Amino acid sequence: MRSSNPVFSRRGFSRDNGYAGFNAAPQAGAAAAGANPYAQGTANPYATNPYAQPDTQYGAPQAPVRSGAMTIDDVVTRTAMTLGTVVLTAALSWALLPVDEANLGKSYGIGIGAALVAFVLAMVQSFKRKASPAVILAYAAFEGVFLGVISSAVSTYISPGTVMQAVMGTMCVFAGVLIAYKMRWIRVTRRFYGFVMAAAMGFVLLMMVNLLFSVFGGGDGLGFRSGGLGILFGVIGIILGACFLALDFKQVEDGVNFGAPREEAWLAAFGLTLTLVWIYLEMLRLLSILNGDD
Image (cartoon, rainbow, N blue to C red; front, side):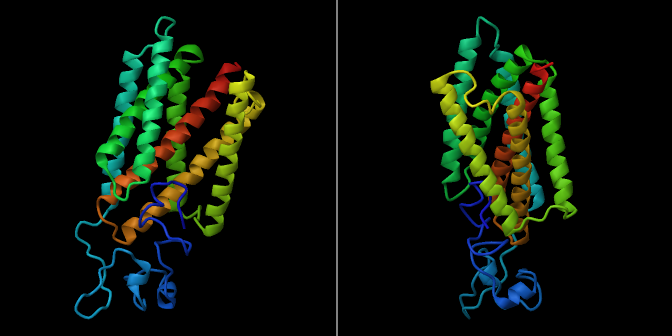
């Protein structure tokens, strides 16, 4: 299964033929053993695990080399570093790039420029075959600049408490999805993945159409970003972000269980950061509409 997050679909975090795991369909024995290459009765662990090492002497696959394998602690550490960079640069841009009347154009220009650079860096990393910590941290830094400017503008012109509400809301969504995933209230299946991807593509297409109408027609385009429709689409965007988190958790879990190399933890951190930024922006926009109507 391919993740909703493009960084997971580039390497061993995904599989084209199967509901969970990696890039080869499991053998019958593996399926009977729960697709676990370490379980008894697995016919061919190398068929389900791309990190298993073939035995060069006898030609039979061996269990993956466990030294240097990715762990949950690795993912947590890299994610903390990446998100910490986002928060730090956001705080600096908030303090150094004021959005008052005298500096509004300059601050907005820098923020939009940072967003474009962050987008390019995200695409570069998404299509690289290996994780690049420098590219990932650079993406986080420029993304933080953009978020700092946008958050400062919302706090200045809409409501000072909106940004903190968005941060708390994002944290609650993350914690809620993590608990639901760990308790198996959310089960990531092929049907779940297909539904999320179809909904996400429809959502993005509608937002692009709305953007085109707003650019060429003026105003708010088709009204998907304000009023009642704006609230509805804000809620949908947050729900999609929560679904992306569930897919990301599944991919990280598979990577740990199958002994992915430790450097893959940077990809996990990058993917989780992308999803959390999505949720924060949708939360910020939704709260801006609600607080702006007060």
